[in-house]
Amino acid sequence: MLKAQYPLEKFRNIPTPFYYYDLDVLRNTLKEINEQTTGYNFEVHYALKANVNPEVLNIIREAGLGADCVSGGEVQAAVNAGIPSSKIVFAGVGKADWEINLALENDIFCFNAESIPELEVINELATAKNKTASVALRINPNVDAHTHNYITTGLNENKFGINMEDIDKVISVLPDLRNIRMIGIHFHIGSQITDMTAYHNLCVRISEIEDIFASKNIFLQHINVGGGLGINYEHPNHFPVPEFETYFRTFKEHFKLQPGQTLHFELGRSVVAQCGSLISKVLYVKEGSTKNFAILDAGFTDLIRPALYQAYHRIENLSSDLPVEKYDVVGPICESSDVFDKDCYLNKTRRGDIIAIRSAGAYGEIMASQYNLRALPKAYTSDNI
Image (cartoon, rainbow, N blue to C red; front, side, top):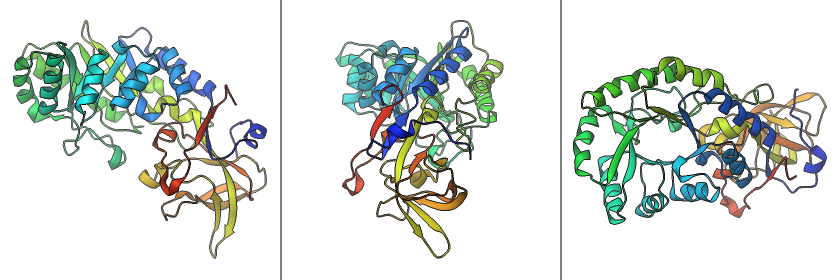
């Protein structure tokens, strides 16, 4: 089976499990993003919730991307990484007062606001600081992203954003919020989207919403379409860089920017997922009555996506070139959901073999926990290993 090239001998000397980031893959990904957006009034903000490894974040900053944050901690991480405040957006359905104050103190580019009560609080806190907060209204376009229900965010039934029927009500309260400046609208319909039809439909809906604002003589200077572009989890060796050309072309062809408008994107998974792998060792190979189990020293405390979302990650035995056999690949956590894959084909596996769980650069290290009092996994990169 085709496997990625890793510094295997170096891996043997590092305690597992750990995360490994191939920074050449990351740099190639960022290069493609910049090539596809050059010459257009596009602004890309990296979604920090995917990964805030300092070395990864530094390279993203060097590539010129802004930051999409969903907590005060992420706002601070973006500032600490040297990302200009003028490129930081702050979203989230439940922003605490201290988080809003932190963003105001750093003069971030924009709050993506999700309700009238939130707008009122931002206005109150901005007034106390004698500041004016720039705000984009997060609107639910009721566009189905056709993805996992845990990561679908743009439907009326989701907790996020302002529903279409409430737009007039929100517009009516804005004049009384004197320390808020409404600069645009924001959307995010979901994650791991691979069917561009969803984005085409979003473009159509945005144009309809623009007409609502235009009828009230409101010009929307900034349109933020969120993120959500998916990656190829099945074939990371063949597709190390996502389909950015198709993604950005969808917006180039189906959404017409007006003079003076900027289109913003919030990409996370598609930026960092393919550069990262979780590296683990086989503790035991257990022969069951109907199947064999490869028991790893990594568990869902290190990579929770398979347990939480039933997500697929390609798994490779880096140590073996023996014929392929079938295993359930599981972790050591005292939970039946601690399973990375069932009926997984690996080169014949033995105790001590080194395993790579691929496409783990997004929502891997950042979601790790210390359940069972396990240590958090360390991280290494191709630049420093």
